[in-house]
Every structure is written in structure tokens, then in C-alpha cells.
Image 1 (cartoon, one colour):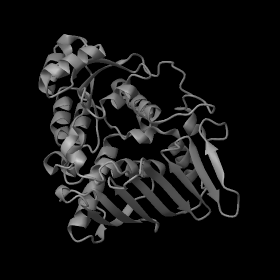
Image 2 (tube, one colour):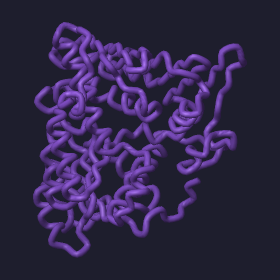
Image 3 (tube, one colour):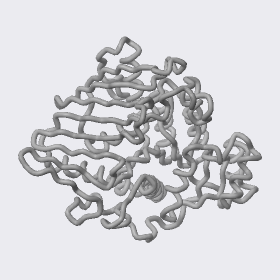
Image 4 (spheres, one colour):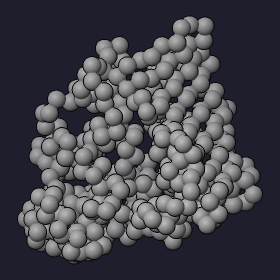
Length: 398
């Protein structure tokens, strides 16, 4: 259980690119990173408006001299300091991730990047190769994946509690882009529907990559064999980017699955659900009730497993925070992700490969997998919503 004791020898000197006053996700990053004394925010290039970024950074408690006008200046200046940053979070629009991540790695910095990591698998693999060459960690902020009940699902599936997996039902939808208004008025929404900045997708990249990664976290042995993606732009000005998509999947073990992702699910406040159906039983998790896991055994009463209880698998206990009498949520999940990445960075710095081998966190391979998910979905949709063999970097070069 997490009780405030140090998990690493000292806090990591941490900087941010983006995540400023007008940013949508910066506070989530800081909430996660600063929770467990594993990071110390000492520098930042928080905003494309240098004056506003400096003012914001000072209000966060960062030295004014270490609030930089851009990431290039920050990396250069910090490299000259004895106490310069050693890890940087990238909380900027998608189209900037590749160049900032590569620059950070070349500056000798560990990286924690927003999803999707980059636009193409080629770019993602280049990042992995550079990170390996430099001996650095790249983590990706799939924030929901820090919910501990997902690890309970993983453990129960590994233990055969639901039998052979037959059906995978995934959903991440909301209604906050049901009209065009947000595209015009909301800066964070505006870039998400611009292909030059967002990349080849809107909701497939912005939403479904979260749920896809969580499904892989829960079922690491399940590999997609082929898929069919049908995507729509119900707000026509967003074309060729989709605001709704359905994906059908066939897995290598014979299981079938589907993903519904949407930003036009009008009236929906929170529609992220994961249901895994096996030959004996089913498991279902909903992020609006993240402390509960529904366990349905054929022919038996429905069970609700509750976070923090003694009957859960020990895999969940390492990141348990508040105990069963108190509710945890997304901020706790983000803190778990940042903590795991900090442990990974500390292990990498010490050459502790044993710790890295057993650590479950969204690493560079998870980032690559997210990019590949988007590419396969887009390839299917843009070829007339046809079935396509699921391509990974390994399958392409096999």
C-alpha cells in the first residue's frame, strides 16, 4: 500500500513543456507527478506565449529564471546546470510530440509524453531506438490505466477465473463535441480537429487509445489479427477526421471484439467501459465507478468486487492508496502512472533491469502500440471500411 514513504532515493528534477494556464491537461500531470514526492518541478516552458508562461510558472513556485520561452532554450540552459532537469513531461498538441521528444532524448532527458505519442509508427520506432541508445525511459500518460481494479482484472484473467476469452467489448464516448461550437470557441478542441496538428484521427487517437491500451494491460497475451473500422464526421467541418467510430476486431485466439469511440454521444458525461467475456464468466469495469469491478459467473449471483479489500489479488495492493472505506478516482490513477514511471526512471538510472522487467506501466512500447492502433483503424476506414490484417512493426518486417 502507498503510505507516503519514498519509493525512490530522491525526487527527480522535473520540467514541463506545455501544460500552462490555458492548457487542458497540465494540472492532471502536476497532480500525478507531485503526489508522492517522486518529482520536483524546477523548470518549464509552459506556454507559447513566453510572458504568460513565465507568470504562470512563477505562480507554481518555479524560479523565474527557469521559466523559459520555449523548449529549445530550456533544454540548452538546463543542461548547463548542476541541478538541471533530468526528466520532462510533454503536454502539448500531438503534432509537436515527435520533435520535442527527440530533442529531449538528445539532451539526455527521460520523457513522459501525452498520447498519442506521435503520428506514425516510423516516428515512434525512431524514438524507441534513440531512447535505447541513450539509456533513457519514455513513458506515455494513459492516465486511466493507473486504476488498480484494472490490475485485478488482469490477475483474474491470468488465473483463469473467466475461462477462455471469447468477447471483448470496449467503449469510450462522450457528448462534449456534439456540436461545432467547441471547435470555434475552445482552443483545446480547435487543434484536435485540425489534421495538421491532431494527426490522422480525432476520437480514435484522443479517446480510443486510452481504452485500447487498458485492454492490452488487462489482456497482455491477446493480439489482434484483423480489424474493420467505420468512422464518421457527423460535424461535417471535421472531415477527414472522425468524431465517431466503430471498430470490429478478430483476435489471434479466435475471440472477437468491438470498440465504440465518440465525441458526439450527446448527453453522455462519461462513457468509458470495458467488458471481457470468457467461457465461464465476465468482468466489467466502468470509469465512473472505478472502485468497483463487476464479476458475473454463469449460473451464480452477480458479484461486485470493491477496491482496497483483502480478497483482491496482491497485484492491486502495491498501488492501493486510501483503503476500502474511501473512494479513489482519476487523480489517483494519474499519480499511480507517474509513480510507476518514476520507479522505472530510477531503475534505469541504477541499471536495475530486474525491476524494469516486472514493472507494469505505459512505456515506449505502449506508445508505439497506440500509434499502430490508430494507423490500422485509419487504413481500414479510408479503404472503404474493410477488414485489414493488423499490422505491427514486427509483422511488417516478418
